[in-house]
Structures are given as structure tokens and as C-alpha cells.
Amino acid sequence: MIIAKATGGLGNQLFQYALGRHLALLNNDTLKMEANYYINSSFVYTLGRFNTHQEITKEEDYLRAGLPNIGDASFYGRIKRKIFRISEGLKPIHKKKFITEPDFTFCPEILNVRSSCYLSGVWQSEKYFKNIEDTIRKEITLRNEPSSEVKNWIAKTSESNSVSIHIRRGDYVDNPRINKFHGVCPIEYYTNAIDCISQSIHNPTFYVFSNDIEWAKNNLRVSYPIFFVSDKIIPDHEELIIMSNCKHNIIANSTFSWWGAWLNVNQDKIVIAPQKWFTGSDTNTKDLIPEAWVRI
Image (cartoon, rainbow, N blue to C red):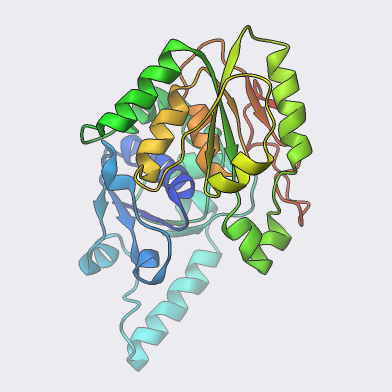
């Protein structure tokens, strides 16, 4: 059994699912997603909205996977967990039962796991699931039929030389801790990205996605046809599918639009991503952005 801890928004969940799914397939095993994080979170667990192959963990799953009972507060329970932590520390990463992501770069040894384990991390690189990308693309499709409004947006993006623009604000602006670490892409980034992509394709039409769509309407200046897609009545998982249907993509420093661009199946797509992903950190992001994408 592979247990993957789910945290954060939809983009994070998709990365966590994709690695877990890959390991489950490699081991001919079941993927269980731990969704306890969402009990007291403003984020919503959304993977069930897609044709994903996963189940939510039950209490007995941890013991079945060979993990200690974290709910056992007895003296012997604490001793067992201490012995477990010591023995885990002596093992190579692919032999561990409890695997914590070593750092932000791709760790190939993870793909050598051949037994039940618990995964804790963000795993933000396509290298964790590149070998099963066709499977992931097939499964990250809507489980239920979308609304007529979503169908209309999909039709529009299909009929035009569509370019998605994602502007991530919300908690990136309002939460001081998140703002210090992530920051927001400045308007100059979008201006340069629009200029870059407009020189490469003919008659672009821009489709804007944002969790602060009013800010986008008031600040984004584009001399081409432009539509503002985000609306409270369109849930995130459907908005992601509209974004992925655009022929080209300008993403923010956000895993949500990363997935919107990655799921785009246009063989000639141009994807523009910010050069600096984390404003307040020197975290190495060399494995985050696929080689074919353009960073500015």
C-alpha cells in the first residue's frame, strides 16, 4: 500500500497524487491519500473530482502499511514509535516506510521503492511521473460532465489561438508569511510574457484566470482580444481544465497553473514561466520547470 499525504491546493494535490500513483503502479498496489490536512484548512480536497485511482486512508491502513500506531499514547506505543524512528534513520530512502522529501529537487531513489510506504512532501517535478504521463493525463480529466458555462469556455479556447494567463494573488498577497516566501509575479512579468508570446504566434486571444479577477481586470493591459474567465460559479477543478485547453500558457509561480500548462496537449505549445519561483528563497527549482518551457 502506498499512502501519500495530501496538503495545499489543487496543484499540490496533483503532484502528490502523481508520485503516489506512479509508485502504486510500480508495486501493483493501492494508492491511499491521507486528507486529514483538510479538516481544518481553507483549501478543499479535490482529487475525487477527477478520474483518479485513489482512496482516502482509514485508520487501519497505517498498520497494514507497517507504520506505528500514532494514536497509541501508552508507554509501549511511544517506545515502539521511537524504535521505528531510529531504525528508519538507518535505512536508505527507498527502503524506508516513512519517506520525507529530502529537498525540493528530484530524488530518483524514490522511484526504487518496492514496498508499502508513507510519502510526505510536495514532490514538484514531472520527473516523478514522467514515465506514466499518459496515464496521469488520462486520469486528470473531469469525472462529471461540466456545466454549460464551462463547455462554452472550452469551445471558445478551442476555436481561437488561445493563451491562458494565470495571476495568483489571494493568500500570496494577504498572508505576510506566504507573501514573504512566494511573493507575486509583478505586472512587468506579464507584460514581457505577453510581448514574447505575441511575437511567436499569430492573432492570440488571451484568457485570464485569477483568484483576484477584479485586480486582473483593473491592471492587465493587453492590445489583443482578452477574456476574464475566473468566476465564483466555476470551481477550481473545472477552471484547471479550461486553462489546459488553451493552446499556450503564461503561468504564475503557482502549481495550479503549472498543471494547467502541463495538461495542455498541444504539441506546439509555448509555456512561459517566471524565472524566480520563490521570491524569498534560494530554493533550487531546476527540476520544477520542464526543459521545453521558457523562463523569463
